[in-house]
Length: 305
Image (tube, rainbow, N blue to C red; front, side):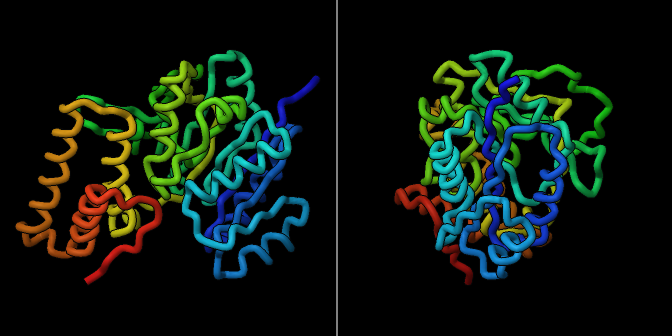
């Protein structure tokens, strides 16, 4: 039997220990035709040396600069193209995977030529039965995106069969390389956040399906509290939400909903004493809106007062 060849792209930036754990879990996959490529985004913690010593058979590419999620994964996609892979799996380094998850994803993608992107069920690593993402949804009326099933205990509510979704998170995304040839790479203007959502919209508008595969399972070492506290996250999420709406050609209602949401958040963080600790996040959001208006995209240094 001929199995499609999969290039698994794991992006590392100063995350050596998480990456080593991720590679250990990938070594237990039951899928027979895959190559792992670690793209190191100019880490300063000796990641590249240690990862290569622990996994000398894994392809290691060093970028020489922090290219962000988009740039680093585009390097991995170009490598997948160069080796003639049929699929690329973009996988966060802070994940661990079930041994059969890749087999289930590939099987789903192979069953229908109209399928372009598939993604697994993603749980919190620290709460292994609690869902972080069961695929993503887009509300074009409000300009919102969200993770389906977020913080729900998995009780089989998403069934066992693959189901269509608006997008799957770039935390774990399997894409056909033939689709990449058709719609292009991730858009480097995003740097990080919203890039996979825009990619999935591009994919759907090109006539391809995006599916969530509930039986394919991984666990993500994500901390919502850390993300919420990060000015960098607020910056890129705000600026890139606006960029996403622009590139997707969103309607007036989506823009009004987004601007109202941003304005309400900024007003609350400015006026309410209990949000005084949000000064850095507020400043990052303001900078994001200004940078969007000025057409400043890609990697940006966040100004801190």
